Every structure is written in C-alpha cells, then in structure tokens.
Image (tube, rainbow, N blue to C red; front, side, top):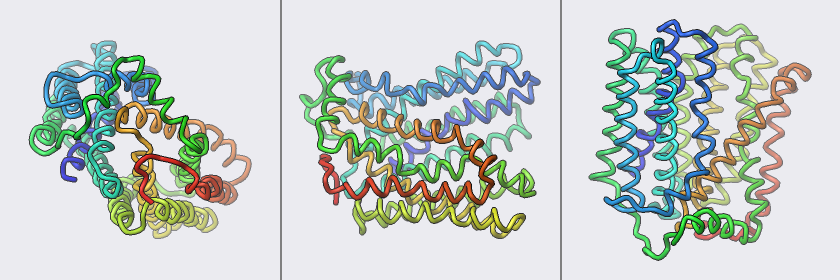
Length: 399
C-alpha cells in the first residue's frame, strides 16, 4: 500500500507541469494567449495511451522485471525531461518547449499504463478498494505539489529552480520502485509472445466474456451524473456571485481533503461491503450528493451551502471513484493488464469529453435548477445496468 501511494504521487507530478503550471510560467513570460491555448494539445498522449500499451505488455526491459523495470525507466526519463524543461525558455524557445512537454506527457501517460498494470497484477482482489484509495491520495497530493506549491514557489524563486525541484520529486517514485514495490509474480509464458498477440488478444479475451458490451456501457455511464454536474460548476458559482478566490480556495482546500478522505473511506468500506454492494451504495450516494448543487441553484449566494456542496460532492464522488477503479482492475486479465486497463480508462475519458460537450446548451436552455435535476437523474442508466452484475463473467471479480 505504501508503494501504491508512492506510485500515485509519481504519476500525479507530471500532469500540472505540462498543463496549468506550465501555462502560468508562459503567462509570466508574456507568451501570447493563442500559443498558450495551442499548448493544451500537449495532453493528447493521455487520451491515446492505449495505442502503445501493447508494446509495454509485450516487451521486457533489461532490469527489475516487466512492470518495475518499465516503471523505473520511465521515472528516470521523466525526471530528466522535467529538468530539460527547466533549462528551456517558454518565450524564446516555445517550439522546443512544446516538443519537450509532449515528450513529458508521453512518458507520463506511459508511466500511468505500467503503474495501473502493476496495481492490477500485484494487489489481491480484496485489496483493490484500499489500493485505489491509496493511489488516488498519492495522485492528489502530487497535483497539489506540482500545481499549488509550484506556483507558491515561483513567487519566491525562479521558474527554472521550481522545475528542477519538481524533477527531484520524481525520486519518490524511484525509491518506491527500488526498495518497496514487489514485482508481480507471473508465469513467463503468460506474456504475449508477439506484438500482434499483445494487440489482438486483449480485445479477444475481453469480448468473448459474457456481458462484455454491457460492462463497457456501464463503464461509460456509471459516473455520467458526476461528469455532467461538475462540468459547469465554476461558471454556475460565478453567476451566483461567488468570487474566483472563494471558488478556488474551497475547491483546492476543502475539495481536495474531501476527495482524499472519500477515496480512502470508500476503499476501506469496500473490504467489508464487497464489490457489487459498494458499486450500488456509492453509485447512489455520488448521484444524491449533487442535490446540494440543486439546493444552491434555488438558494443563490450562500457561502456555507456552497462549501457543503463542494465538500459533499468530492467526498461521495471519491467513494464512487474507489469502487469504480477497483472494478476496472477486476476486469483485467493479468496476461495483458496494461493494454486492457489503458483501453478501459480511455473509455472513461470518452465520457468526460462527450458528456461535457452539450452541458452549456443544457444549462442555457433549462436553467440551473433543471440542469442539476437532469444531472442527478443521469445516475439511473448506470444503476440499471448494475442490475445485470451477476450475469457478467469477469475473472477474479470479488462479490
């Protein structure tokens, strides 16, 4: 569990450094907004990581084994790449910075692939909940370090030094790989024997299972209510009259603590409740948690209610995320867990992209109360599919 926490931290560090923190550095360097906007494309590797995940399932690095070996290689390359960003000027060398940032995002997405596979291969089914909670906690803490802490440091020391410090923080993951994380015990013959097998067999293995299409639909729909409810919370609260400082402070402070506590509590409760019951209970709670946003839409400018809404949503959504992440791990065949988990998480990302697109139209034409009422009702499709749980045949899925 300590290694899982550390791997969550090393996975979360690069995200802001190629996203919001880099944008802040570019803004300070007077880079124009058009260029800063184009830099958002740097994050594309995170949505396309399933394309090269079979390579990481098929081939072994020369040291430490199939999972830890790749993790160590990628962590060292990430540290060097972040240090390379530190010595590159975003204003004078914007093209080079873009190239380096894409490389960092590619390496980060690749690290996510192997760390997810390591968690799936190493944790026992009854540990999936706690493992998901520990991983999310590490990830959130890392985003706080490479996001909020990096910005605070940048007010006191040059950006170059900030990025060097962030590169050093990757050492947390390296230490976990060298001294804490065990290499999953696996039959050498279980590994795909060719790249063709690594690409085709994960799909064949998944779709030959009973209820595979229903399972994929459930993955898309289970957190649809949360995605829609949160898509426009910032414009919603600004329209009510809350300041940007109010929203930022509550989201970064109360929201972060509530998410960490929710994922840890959800993981702990899963060990008692089991997978199926947890998905039911947390699925209902994460949808019902958005009732406070509905109340806020009727009440208007009410600071205590706003804090309660954000805290409750993050807490209950965190519990749902713990069960959801554990469910995804239970779906993966350890022979090619890197490829299957990458495909499933890409499907999760599809929900965020597609469901977020029409939300502005909905809010504009329905009004905020009706918008949040619709968002809450979107918990129903996922829960209806969950009634089919006992008919899904999934290897190693705990009941």
